[in-house]
Amino acid sequence: MELLNIKITLPKSWLIKINITMKIRHLLTHFICLLAVLFFTTSNIFGQNTVGLLSYDQAQSYQGYTLFYPHNQPNVYLINNCGELVHVWVDDADFRPGNTAYLRPDGSLVKAKRNSSVAGDNIWAGGGGAIVDIVSWDNELLWSYELNNDSLRLHHDIAPMPNGNILMIAWELKSNEEAIAMGRDPETLNQVVLWPDFIFEINPETDEIVWEWHVWDHLIQDFDSTKANYGVISEHNELVDINYDTNDGKSDWMHSNALDYNPELDQIMLSVPTFSELWVIDHSTTTEQAASHFGGNVNHGGDLIYRFGNPQTYDKGDSTDQLLFYQHDTHWTNEFLPPNHPMKGNIVCFNNRLPGYSAVEIFPSSWEMYINDYEEFQGSFPPFELENTITHPDTFSFYSTGLSSAQLLPNGNMLMCSGRQGYMVELTPSNEIVWEYKTPIRAGFFVSQGEELELNNNLTFRAFRYPPDYAAFDGRNLEPQGVLELDAADNQCERVVPNINLEEVSLGFFPNPTSGNLHLTWDNGKIVRIDVYDLLGRQHISTTGNGGMKYLDVSHLEPNIYIVNIEGVGSGRFIVE
Image 1 (cartoon, one colour):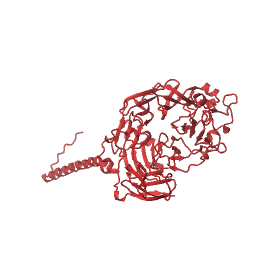
Image 2 (image 1 turned 135 degrees about the vertical axis):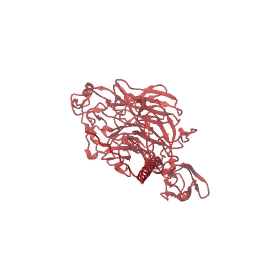
Image 3 (image 1 turned 30 degrees about the vertical axis):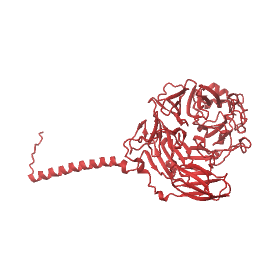
Image 4 (image 1 turned 90 degrees about the vertical axis):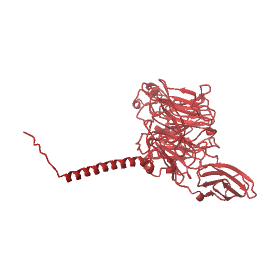
């Protein structure tokens, strides 16, 4: 079969039209491509940010510097409220967080880390650490400690102490035979070993372990009367049921993920997410007393002196009494709160696994200074309900099954970090969003502005904001070094900061009259000077405030009329009764 060879001759005018049409189409194609390039290029300028600084209300946000230590990379970052890098502690690319970092008043950084490869490690689970470093502000290694062998491994958190020592959490390996001898039901041991937690305090000056506590010394069980620790669990809330297990019999039985030290009480708080509880133990004991049931300021040795979150762990109540759900970052309110702050000494935590969302809880413990112990009612520790739960305005968009943190700021705002989203948000007491930041890192690499990150792309264990007058910053260069995200537009901060008319700044204070605390509020997020005078012009108080809110102790003033002046904001009169 032959193919037909047909030649078609078109009129010359047709050829001209076709040629013009093709040129127009070609030009249109180029124009459309140019529009696409312009759209994607300028979307970072005119569109909403997807990473880095997302929003910022300078008038209401607490001013300071935020420290965070993202997963899947080795560095610790310090940013200002504009999301600009002001300092970074760089480490070798072979290391990963293990998992927290703390900035000390002298400017040194204490951080936990591990090798990126865990192949061949005898003990490994999520949150595993191995090494604790102290580095100077200029990133000079000052001290390093490693614990990662066949039977012991650091994990999750550390707690620098005022005396320079460091508290650490570690797993210690126990064989199935040892666990069974202590009363563990062998049917619930799905792995060949168990890793209960212990806490120890080390002195970096001498490398000496000066104190330690082991949960293994404080167990109870009602499974086998022929084994150790047999007793009635509901009658011993100070002990830990070795058979309470929500981790499917895995070796990582407790998975403790937070450690905090209270120097005023000389007590330690431990977050145990698999129990959905926080525990408090007495640190005033000797190591020998910590292994017993007597001694220390509270005279309970190393037994639990307070536990909260899930009374089912000691056979009290039922599921309706559970208040914490795989919580993270349990701690007493931090040291930057003024002494007269109404929530000073309360407990804060990130409540991860509420039904479909996460929240932050703030509540008082049952510590009673007059009896030097924690009060309990019918064998359980109060509170029995949570009255101050903080949720994101878009509640069900804020959810992280693990990681995460919460910090009550001195002006009453709450800084929250949803770890699996790498999302940090600051909320006012009236639940307004005044600052948002999203970690711009995927798999250890910075991403471009405009990119969308999915869940777990930018895991961030915690975020913590230090006030600008923190001693660590004295004499330090905190000039902005640019943002972390790539392809960011100029003046990122100005783009998201609402315009502030300083003429509209207002001052508020209550209660008025007062006999104790004066709660000052103003619409200026900067550090301001606050002065209190009597009507004769004599100065009685001179201090500073930050973030638009201050609790001022005026209880020492004589009954009279006083003038409070906030520099750059305004002044007003109040009465001391």
